[in-house]
Image (spheres, rainbow, N blue to C red):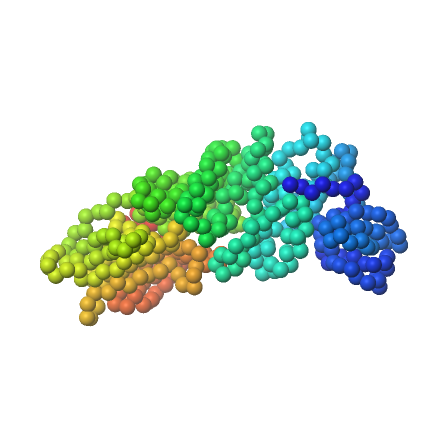
Length: 467
């Protein structure tokens, strides 16, 4: 809800504005005020406004140039809307803009209200939440602004993600935008994109609540039809749908349900994105979708026949576990050569043998947007299973692909993409098969000689690492 505003008002336009006990600069400072704070004006003296702050239940004097008087009347509504439109596009003035939006909604007659002020409040609230999440390195500076906007009914949700505090706007104003039948397509699209953000889903949610949220996200995204929004917004919608359908595919696969359709929809939506339309600011949304779709690349795929004597099989282990066993068909009575169990999704369709090594590789997906590569290879003393992770230090999402094998140098070729602390990294690597130590690394496969000669055809045909 939006706070009801009094008729004689002043809105603070500066941060750290001093509220003093008397109308002079040397008087005792009672408190500090912040942009967007709303005060009742009770008089003026010596260049100071005599004001009362209902939020802090305190009166005092404020320099006249630290606030702007606003008139709450139908005749003043156009001027308030003009200021709101300016502040909506001014980063760093979110609290002030939301305060002016509240004044406008109080001044404009109900018959003239459109979705625009609610869209503006939502945009500014979302931007303020992103700033408070620490992306700028000055998260503490925005805490007072969060207190200011709370008086207007703007609520935030907090939870920890990746070792830092994530602040997210609860989206009430965007829900209101979607209720306006005559809301502009861009307004409705912005609302849907905000309400379906993956980084604003509580990471501690269980599988069932998370699946319910993803289903709701997919339904929201279906409200915006192709051709309704601008080219950039349309590509953002495709990228967001790709990530949502990747989440649904993982959830369906995890429950033992067919995931083919969801995985195919995720890939189709990703291929519909035009990265050039996104610009530099929005390109991370596309790369995020690429990682999410890549992680579920093998979802719903049927296992292929495994030629050669060495084969991998997957059987149920303890409750919730799948156990992978390596066997040699030439010694059927010898039992398993090596065995490993996991709570992740074992992608048997990804099994690929390397007869020259000998070795086998297998994709395993323990988390929705995290896919590892298991390498089964022989060393002196027996067979080993080594796990190649997309990254270290608890990155947020990523995958690692088997990309080929160079028999002359016994090097494994892999491609990795990872998101760590909000930054994306992609690398192509040559690893020594014996110990999986890194030999060479590059940002493009063309920079590595073995990739040019020995990259796997199946990988090149199906990977998204070359996007």
